[in-house]
Image (cartoon, rainbow, N blue to C red; front, side):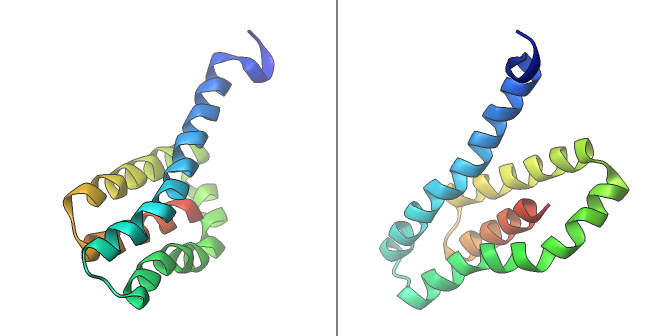
Length: 110
């Protein structure tokens, strides 16, 4: 296949689907898991809000960082950051959830 359905583009589409669907899935799982860990609604809200707050803070610098380092290098960095964040969820408690959400927010900002 050629054009928009070529193998490199299909890989990129799949990667984007996995990257952004992980956040949507976690938007449901984190409050449920936090509740089972005994967290209050405010604590769960702070953990969930850490994602958007971090993304909002880092967004103004994202263009400059991409310009300086290049899009391919940034893509690799955010994939590693997001992978590390996703690995924190099964092995940590609420503190780990907060760190993971901050990592995800900063990687999404880029």
